[in-house]
Image 1 (cartoon, rainbow over the protein chains, first blue to last red):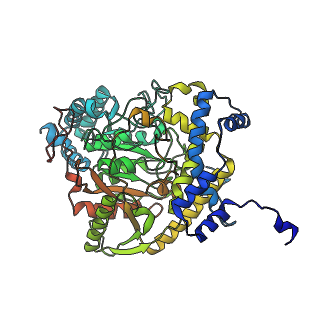
Image 2: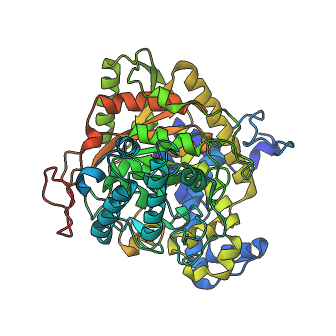
Image 3: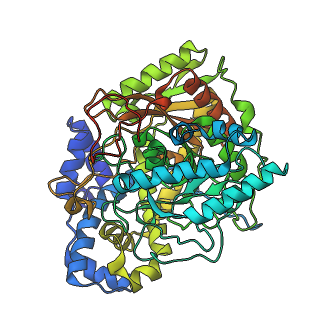
Amino acid sequence: MSASLSRTTPLSRRRLLQLLAAAGITGPAAVELLAQARRPISIDAVRQASAIVGESFTDDRLAVIETALRRNLDQFQIVRDLEIDDLVEPAPVFDSRRR
Amino acid sequence: MADDDLVFKSGQELAALIKARQVSAVDVVRAYLARIDALNPKVNAYITVTADQALARARQADREIAAGKYRGPLHGLPYAPKDILATKGIRTTNGSKVTADWIPTYESTITARLNKAGAVLIGKLNLLEFAMGSGVLSGFGPARNPWDLDYGPGGSSSGSGVALAAYMTPLAVGTDTGGSIRVPAALCGIVGLKQTYGRVSRYGVTTLSWTLDHAGPMTKTVADAAMMLQAMAGPDPRDATAAHEPVPDYSKALTGDIRGLRIGVPAGYFFDGNPEEAATVRKAIEKLREMGAKIVTVDVPHANLAGSAGWIIAMAEGACFHEQRLKEKPELFDPLVRERLEAAKFYPAVDYVKSMRIRTLLMDEMRQVFQKCDVMAVPGGGPAGKLDSPERARSDVKPGSASTAFRGGNTFIGDMTGLPAIVIPCGFTAGPPVLPLTIQFYGKPFDETTLFRVSHAYESATDWHKRRPPLSAGSSRTSAGGDQPIL
């Protein structure tokens, strides 16, 4: 076995879904398994991220935001999991002739 | 003519009576004002009622009509817009304590055009705060579904759906970013049109999402929706996204003839909601086949992404729009709105842009759908559910529920692609309670004409739209079954 293959390579979420599908686990069950394995967001993580977005929140607000973001991660993941062709550009199209 | 006789007529029927001077605009407005007085304490459809101004406008309409200066079918007809459309000199609350006392110094293009056409504004309608709140904790409390007061009317154009279902206005205006015209239309059993993005100007409509917002007519009949769109549509120099597409004569679509029309019916996702509604919609599609339409199977492979990607776009744009307001007065927001907007500040830009690419993907898939059909038929998204408790209403994270991606129903794809879509009644649940069920048609860009054609034909061949909720002005709850006229 070569040195590169002997290293543990982190599996991408996409690859994990493929492996689960091969094992017959698909759909909501697969998504739930991956959700449980996902690294959790913490209030501390949101507090630190607040510095990036230039905001400061009380601990109470951070708790609300953290709970909402954990739910939002499922939305993000569905979008992130999609393999999309390079030729697909964002809508709307920028038009320099703005009227 | 008795007030009851007037309020149960369609806008088109009232227009004919007003034009022929068989009734006055003042009489019509008075009839609706009396009905609002009687029912609004129960259903909370209106935030503001402009009785004096409405009567003054109605008197002006009557004078003009008597002098031969008839402006068209909207002349003298009452209407009410969702309280997110700026009305100059008239309080516009956005359904929020944050802007509870805002008196705009400008008029939205939509209300300006309806006013110019002679329509009479009778009040401003309740909504979910900033088109995205809980309704329950939004600034002016929840509107209630006239079919059962313990049930929600959907949103965010909640008051518009309620006012029409309860015959408190013949015409209304709503807005739609993810379904906010079509969901209350579905849950209240009325007609809701989200027209093509750009068909109607958004100037003067408080923004939730610049790229997803639409404003359109909500009515009791398809002909009334066509009548309203005729006045509302067209370019606007104050809205760069308002299209220069010619506005056709929509009345020509109302023939009742759908022979040869191709109706696409998608498999899977769109029919995965409520089974009773799905079955009812399939019966409606079969009726359309009997009327001469051709039914074809179509597919939208990534339809399930519309909700998740649409949510990211809507919340990110909304957080940007409300940035300053949220910093200055966070405590005045509906807790649900505040939660959504504050969380959206952390959305990665790459996810937003990818969601915009998903829009292109969906537009391409729908373009392929419309190579095979003229309209696509799907369930409207009912029936209504019970109103949330204040505890449950304050967060998207409901106690005891698993975290799941926002599905987006059958409506978000319309906002993501900008395609026109109309919801019309097609049945009722077995109950109890007996609640409306609806069918939704999607059309090609700027082809509202074909949507009017198919929906008017179905409506003319059925009588679902004529049923009235058994709401009695004398009790706080609906009466126990039977179609009794409302007070």
